[in-house]
Image (tube, rainbow, N blue to C red; front, side):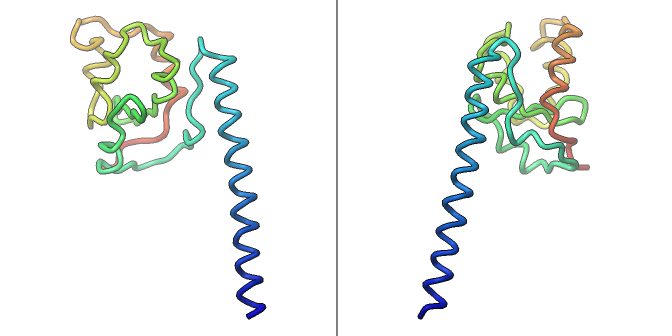
Length: 133
């Protein structure tokens, strides 16, 4: 009986401390959004991954969770959308969860104009990996 009590206590303690560290990370993101609204910050989960599956990409298809695939690279632009500084407004949402948003990006949604150099540089900060073959 004591062994079970010890295991439960150990589990609850680890759960408590992991929850505290997650809350601390979440608060850091919120603070950076407030302090750096002009330069949208990438999400905490923007860990460089490789070979992101099609099934995973298509799940991220809305304003609250948006991944873009441009030239085979996958970008998590969710935080950029949250800040609300995209000059084209909600046009960015057209590419969320698509398997290839390259044409949308290079023609600004079909207007025939490419994005600026600064927009292309900013996009690189949201890179999370490459689409799996």
